[in-house]
Image 1 (cartoon, rainbow, N blue to C red):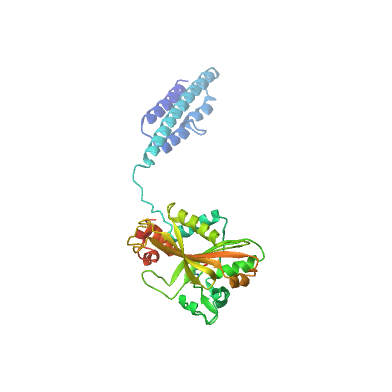
Image 2 (image 1 turned 90 degrees about the vertical axis):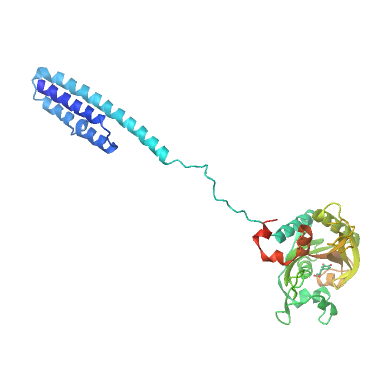
Length: 343
Ligand code: DAH
């Protein structure tokens, strides 16, 4: 029994000494298996116990149990400490320094033309108009003839056209959408649309570009009058350029309207006193308009004896230049971010 007791204590002390050392988690595990594991040195003593005299068996069993328990507790404590240390180290190593300034993410900007078209649409949608579209490559028929511009008409010279073939042209105006829409909707009333889009003319200088944008407007119904045109345009101009703007209509000529007018807005810089922008006149021309010509109503399928209508067309670049004070139209197409950033 003496021998047995010594061996038990020896194992115990050996383990305790080992545990004093800085063991790695793997070494700790290995030590545990080697002693109190199923085939460990302490566990093996249970078998040897059988060879002891009966009177000592109980005492030896108890002693092994006690030592085993205390070793298991020592292992558990050590494992616990180790886990805490490991967790602390992980937390320290994996911290992210969120106080470092990040890389700046540049925001994009909407193009001034997009902004202006969106705003025009917004205003007219509020007045009960809807948005219509037509093709950019157009037939001579819709671009000219259906708008009361026969082949030999001198007013065709007002617009330098890109012809694709004898009958096909890059549309010089958004006005063909008037007839296309009427034909689609006839006989429904009212026809109340705006049509934004690209148009093309053989022109290129500081105020003209071979491709530019227009917004067409068309309102056809029973009893539409020129005063309706003026009221709608005044509302539009005030929302677009400010509540104290005024408009005036000057007599003009367009083949697809009768009577026709050019519409001026009181200068947004000087308010009408006269300045460089309005060339001293106090007024700035912003669009063409008029009462839809009876022939155009007929082309759209409507009876000019029953319905009347007004139409207008404006240049989007021009509106953008006036609204944002852009002096050269080419800036609008260069897409220099230093320019675009300002909107
Ligand atoms: N289409 C004309 C142009 O491009 C603008 C225009 C004038 C449109 C009068 C109209 C209008 O609808 O009534 O110069």
